Length: 370
Image (cartoon, rainbow, N blue to C red; front, side):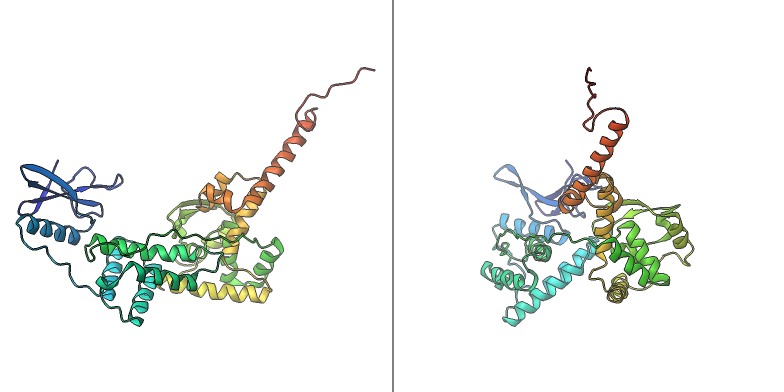
């Protein structure tokens, strides 16, 4: 086993994740996998987790362990402000190519909440305080029918995991709790409502809503859709939100119209900040919904497309491939439409059997003897 000597008497190595590209080299310590220490004590080789994934955290852990073996006083943890810790965490997420929109929002809210209570340093955070913040966040995000609280709270959990691994605190002060929520039943717009929105749109707006209607793509993916993802009349790529693969076939006339648009992207100049771009398209679509007298959001196009495919008898697994959402989620979220599709296929099978001279259940018809 390869090791790297970081501090006198302390060797370090990495226990890589199975998907880490450096997994064959345990001496490589600059990836985001778990770091370990190895040292000699009482004639024995000791291996213990450094409780960190980062270079900085590993260096601190090695120095702390070396001082401990020399019989010196334990190295004190740096006095870190909550605001600077949040800033360092967000910077770390950028290096790991993680999205920062929700992390930044929740990190900033936590900083503001602490400042209002004159809590400045990380060392001041207790489990009781994190519980209080959880209750405050519940009032902001939880309305009894949304997963927003669970999503946003996961950012706070990620922050405290990071500060603990970086040894900025002695232990994770976050209270262990399971976030429960009730997801609302999906309300799918009618075909007439979708058509009213399409009829209200003109020009590029019309192509945008038609693309959503015939692909089920989320607004972010539609906004930044590039021509490289369109081959013939097939659009394929990876969802921005989950990175899950999708592949969907659109009408040829729509593919021709999209291919004829100028530039590399259909609905983006490639310069505008993507978040600002999405907000602009949301505003334009809200105006269409209001003009058409339809109560819906852009995401309802996705619900409509998925429900339409399922009710036509397309298998959930195939719909999953079209839209980049797991089959399990589709079956759970669109249970009614899956049943409608299965009922339709059953009826078609019965018709085929009867055309073959069988009864509706596929049994031979016994002729009665006169």
